[in-house]
Image 1 (cartoon, protein in one colour):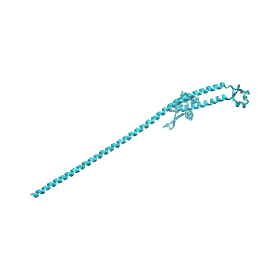
Image 2 (image 1 turned 90 degrees about the vertical axis):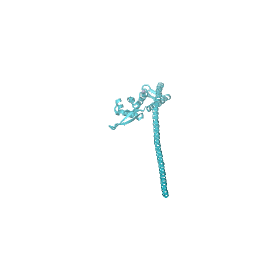
Image 3 (image 1 turned 180 degrees about the vertical axis):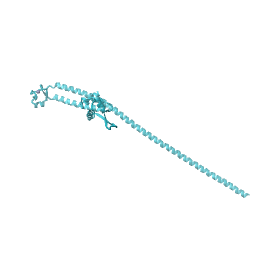
Image 4 (image 1 turned 180 degrees about the horizontal axis):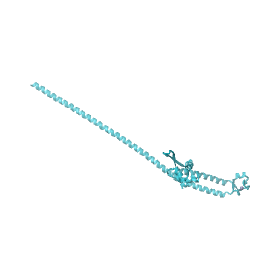
Length: 263
Ligand SMILES: [Zn+2]
């Protein structure tokens, strides 16, 4: 159904001869314009003319890629299905409104006809011609609108049926587009969360390193403190030893002195 509608769009914009381009453009990926021209058996300029006409209505999108060797750009195209359906919907509404106003005019106004030439005129115009055919000179007769009205109403019903189908297709396509959008949003959210997580981990790691360094410093401080304490003890004990030695020396010398006195 979608393809049929897309073809209708291309027929409205470009013409029946271009409808086959839809088979090539209705894809998820963009299609190389040279492949399109080859498959349609058209020159690249003919192909581009068709694409530009559709592009003027914003119903195809393109990307370009530079040929590194030759230095020129190649364009890749794809049809915008949802926009095309909206275009078709607007076109159908316009046709229905036109038909409705014609039906209204047939139901409220009188029309005259020349039976020989099948020329038809509104009452105002018939008055201008004195109800006489300018082609053959016959007098106009009042037209019976029953058949025409019936036909017009049938056309309107068909157009309204088409409109309902197109609206249904728009709903389907919108859902598809929304799914793709939601997926993209989710992906973005996940990437953002991953980034946050990573940043958090990096911060935690950095903090750990700082703590580790701080730990090292603390150990160093402790070692220095201990070394100082040992030095103090050594100093103290050295002092003690020295004083002990001094005392001993003093004692000895005193003893010697007293021994001398005694002798
Ligand atoms: Zn006539």
